[in-house]
Structures are given as structure tokens and as C-alpha cells.
Amino acid sequence: RFKNDPYAIERAARFVSMVPFVDDLTMFKNLPDMYSTSQEFLDLGAGDYEEHAILLANYFQYIDDQ
Image (tube, rainbow, N blue to C red; front, side, top):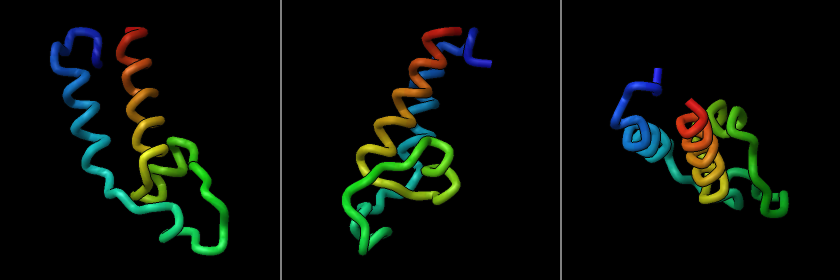
């Protein structure tokens, strides 16, 4: 799907930016700083810097491999 899309990177960045930012300490009050897998992040529907960065990096890697 991304193979011939000249805007694939922009679309991936826009998609990831649409996921709400919520600090881990707010979501998981009694746990130390942690990060979720990309699937867990999408299932939760929110995350902080690490989750956004990891998901975006995964999309960029996928697009680059096409």
C-alpha cells in the first residue's frame, strides 16, 4: 500500500500524532516509568513520548522496507 505513495511518511506521522498523549504516570499511577508495545499503545488509545516514537519508527521502517 505504501509502495507507490509519495506521502506515506507524512500519512504515518499524521496517524501517530492523532493518538492522544497521556503520561505513563497518569495512566499507571503505582508503576514505574514503562513503555508499551505498539499494539498495546494502539489498544490503549493513548501513550507518552516513548510509545509515539516507537510506533512512528516502526511505521517508518515498514515504509522504508517497501
